[in-house]
Length: 81
Image (cartoon, rainbow, N blue to C red; front, side, top):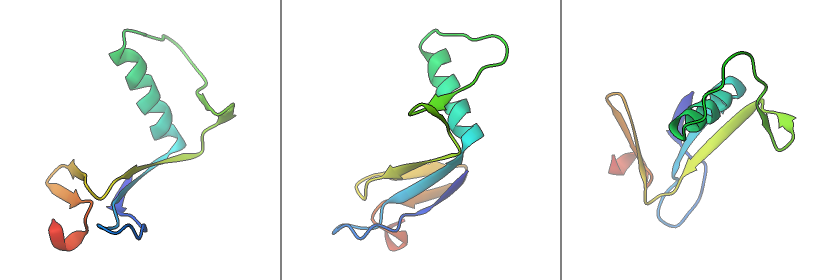
């Protein structure tokens, strides 16, 4: 997982980009299923849009923020953190 400021040129800031590997996307989907009471035992294949997922990205709007460990990213940019 990589977290950094986005490349967006929105009026209020660049936003924050969270990049995930395909395995991390699959794990996130599996965690969502468990949170909704769906438990899968054994091997599984997770497909996104009918294909194996190689990577994913979560874009956080300039009005949002991301906290991970001791770090915080403000969507309005590093000068706002």
